[in-house]
Amino acid sequence: MLGLLNALSWIQQNYVENLAVAAGLLYVFFTIKEKILLWLFGIISSGLYVFVFFKSGIYAYSALYVYYVVIGFYGWYNWARKPEETMEKESLLKIHYASTGLLWICIAVALVVTIPVYFVLKHFAGSDMALADALMTSGGMVATWMLTQKIIEQWLFWIAIDLLSMSVMIYKDLYPSAGLFLTYTVLAVIGYIQWKNELQKATPH
Image (spheres, rainbow, N blue to C red):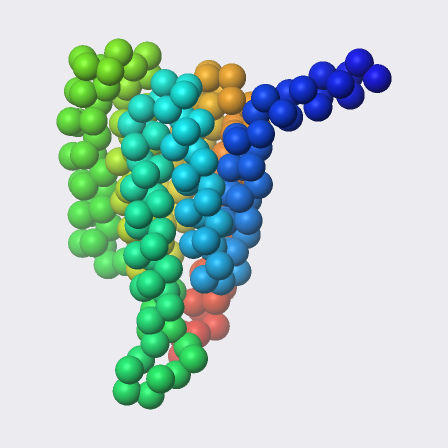
């Protein structure tokens, strides 16, 4: 009985984080299924995580989730667009591979953005894990943009980001979120495989 009361107390104290976790799981599920509903749950989860991460002192990551909310609306719009000439039900966007040049640009942008974010966190915000925070932030910005374009390599970016994020959540005692990012990692692998299979089906032989 005491264990149940402690569990209920913990849920009550961490309800914002738990809601963010639930919405985040739905976000990844609908991403794998290539359903536009992913953006709704992504916006909800990101909005809640702005509060959770700021409260935990993960400042850049908190700001990143503000970016996620904003780009979530852009992604929703971009996925919903239809060809104007035919007004087909099918979206203009198709799953595709990035060119080698674009991939290098994405990696370069992530690394370049990491430098000033790290500097600010280290010298002005007093962050105790400035580099990890900066890497998660810059990588997440690039990976989310790739998702809005249905670039399949976005899953590979997310695998790396989610593993790093899981480590940070454990360090910050955010255990539900650590579990979420572990789940994200597994789902990112599944998502990559499923998107790759979909692309192969759509590619004429």
